[in-house]
Amino acid sequence: MNAIIEGTGKTPGNAPVTEPLSVIGYWRCMIGIVWREGLRFLHQRGRFVAALVRPLVWLFIFAAGFRSVLGVSIIEPYETYVLYEVYITPGLIGMIQLFNGMQSSLAMVYDREMGTMRSLLVSPFPRWFLLGSKLVAGVSVSLVQVYVFLAIAWFWEIEPPLLGYLTVLPALVLSGLMLGSLGLLLSSVIRQLENFAGVMNFVIFPMFFLSSALYPLWRMRESSPLLYDICNWNPFTYAVEVIRFALYVQVNWTALLVTVGCTITFMSLAIFAYNPSKGLIARRGGPGGGS
Amino acid sequence: MTSDNQPVDALQIEAVSHSFGKRKALDAVSLRVGQSGFCALLGQNGAGKTTLFSLITRLYDNSSGSIRVLGYDVRRQSGLALRNLGVVFQNRTLDAELSVMQNLIYHAALQGMSKSQAVERGMKELDRIGLADRQGEKVRALSGGQMRRVEIARALMHSPRLLLLDEPTVGLDIGSRQAILTHVRRLVVEDGLGVLWATHLIDEIDDGDTAYILHQGKVLAHGGVDEIVKETGTDTLKAAYAAIIGPAETGNREVAA
Image (cartoon, rainbow over all chains, first blue to last red; front, side, top):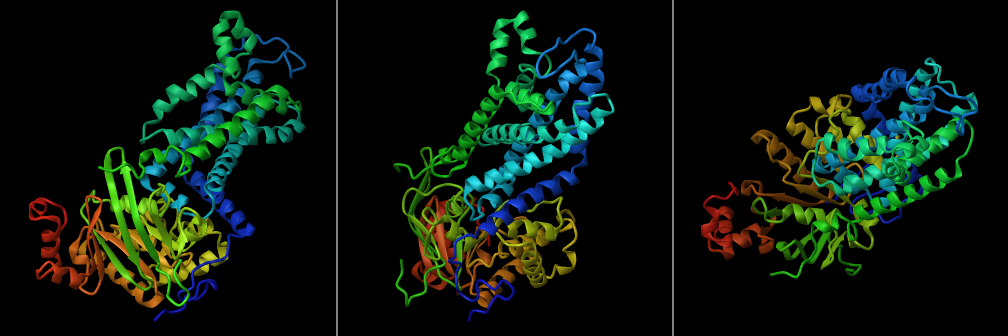
């Protein structure tokens, strides 16, 4: 005998679900994923503090120390000579998002091992949608971090135009998506739960230092053409420039195009990597010729 | 597809093979779980149980044979197949930092359910497992057995017709094991759920159950437990299991009564 399951109003007795997923279902799913990420973030206060302290240390100490050493001439988008602190602020915003993207990628490797990734992937929604929602969730968290950082930096006389706080938002979403999908891609490649130090050394540090985050690229060219070329090939440079210009209500079209291109590339590769029949997960086995 | 007058199987696996490099994890495995049926998948660690689960849940792709949930092919109609499927994985997959109800709401959202639907349904499921009063507590505060029961409740949030459980009682004390087994058996009777219960513990299987004996990726025997026992000319499933996989193999194996 099959008792009727009350309450859901959709699958009494033995009737299987036959209707396709609704648009509102997609919406609920994405909100659910963002909501969970937000809750986790609230519960991990240490992560929030660390995410804020890191760029603030750079701003308060590093920038203060180097202020006199590193002069920054008038370059776009700045209209006057700017203090070194002002110059590195967009780079530090990029750093927040870089760490956030890598951290959520690491969380995903951890998730995969612990099985929470599996419970995400048994959702009936298409995998690209689930991964995309996961990205949106990560970006939302990074936005909170960035705006809190900008608020504190304001008291340190980092005062971009008020409108800049608004125009930087789409730039932050874009750079967050780019770094998040890079993290997602890495999470599919990294096989086991490795410590954060590996990612720090081989991803975060090179990306951060070999970019325009800490010094204008023309300065880099003066000291080493090779390093200048590397910086020029680093997607992070472009993400930082998109943020820098947007913060001063301007658009750097080259940087914007490169960042959009990289986002699409990383995201497609990550979705490919998580596709059970095509990607890297499939590498873990197949029907085989048999013995 | 099956004909209209015959109820479709909750799970139907036909000739599925899967390899990791040269090692063949599954070799032409076929298996059926009827609706309102409790089916045990018995095999020691490494027999291929988890690989089979990964294929059913689409973590890996089955490129040979076919897997159908309620008649829906998991490759071609994965959305509908997954909507009719609930899973309890071998690893704990609840978020320890979140409350019991928050975990359930998250899972329901992954199935496209609204928050109010989730709370209503979640309270009902928690009530059934006797944990309704713990809904606001963090998962961290629960015992291992309670977490497992919450995972079962979570797997049922979207009213699936097939429930997969991968070694759900591992690491639990006898009392908790029994409670979980009793609960799942009740679901089969009361809800008409099809259940595939993977285990290496023979005493979790009753005489009236259907069982598949999986060994080194192959199904060596299947059918009613009494039939399996009769065919091997033994008295108990334990003896039958030993006879089927070969006496030499059982000596130091983890399959335990």
